[in-house]
Image 1 (tube, rainbow, N blue to C red):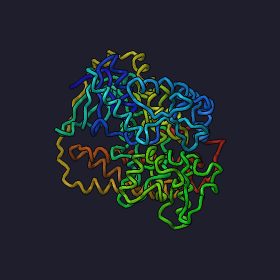
Image 2 (image 1 turned 180 degrees about the horizontal axis):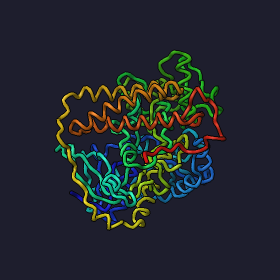
Image 3 (image 1 turned 60 degrees about the vertical axis):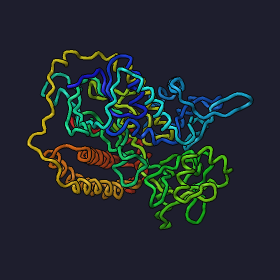
Image 4 (image 1 turned 45 degrees about the vertical axis):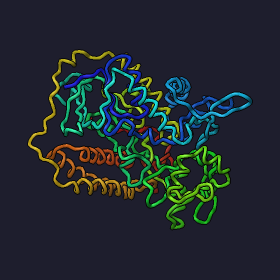
Length: 531
């Protein structure tokens, strides 16, 4: 059995930031189910929203965030994260991250981008590969730390809690079971400070901009451990995913619209003005629904993002990754519009936490996309996610250190993992079939536009699937595929249950049965808990 002062599950911006700062105070394990660089962070193109310009202000950033969040943001959390942003950006710069700059009147300043929902330019970026550069800088710094073990190809199975072990005292985290993917053995790791930084759950949908790792592991583990889950009905669909039969969910950054890109339908019309006065720069929930409506109305397979009026050199320099990727698929964005469709992108709900990442379960923290602090409300403002990961990770370290470790809990013996009389999975096709069925039913019944009838159908089928998966789980040796399927089914059910309980349309949750907001009964978070 291994023991650490801190265990971080996930290796994106939130998890790595926490690990680097926590390493000054004790031993740290970073558990990641693929390589260290495999995270949602590495796929982030746009950048980090932060007030750095004299033309901008914290008040404007707060206002834009609250407006996008459709009445469900926690304003105190919003103000805390927005005002602490510059200090956390400084931390990244100190580590060696070089955000794009431009020369203005003889001096250098940040080259700020603008995205949908922002009233000012405030998005710091590194071309269109911001997340990848951040990931590289953090991993490089992590490799220099002697107090951090990076456990790659290790997948967290379940949290170990006092309640699960039958202790009547205050329930709290005591450790975690972790699958070593190389040996197939499940290890027991003891720690009274567990940090979930597992990202989101985009792979619960058939079409997503997320990498394959985004299977909702943290939310599912926290749910099974008894932590409170919040606002899972609010899944953000990015309006502009590249539409091409050979492209695997490639995101066309919102920054393209921020630099003047116009959405057009199959007749070449700038249709967004019919849906919102901000046109193509409206918040994502509005743009995604508008595109969905245009596609359904016209019968077309996609819409088009047109930025051909910009100079060729500007596009190549500002969007090198998008330009080269599109070119590989035969699309020259300098000469022709880019075909795009919406795809599942970001989980605005998650494990309910305070602004320090603390959950309802003592000793358990959730930071980044897996956590629900109240920053995003019913719809995330573009480029606020990397910012939240940075700020909440910093605060979580301080909170974890201040919360005195309950040393008497160290006396509680932790049982080693017992596989029992199980066998190796003999029919992987069953796992793949169930995985595919979950993703298709979520896309068809729990997508951008919902109805109670569709949600009820999804709920009934998911209950049956969960029974099948539970039987599979207890009769076969655990594997990454089986664990991910189990987590996907759990998170899908949480999304459906949350959506069924909200009898209104707000932000990312839009239902034809209740198309209006209900300011009397639903200006509150949707909370779910097993206990």
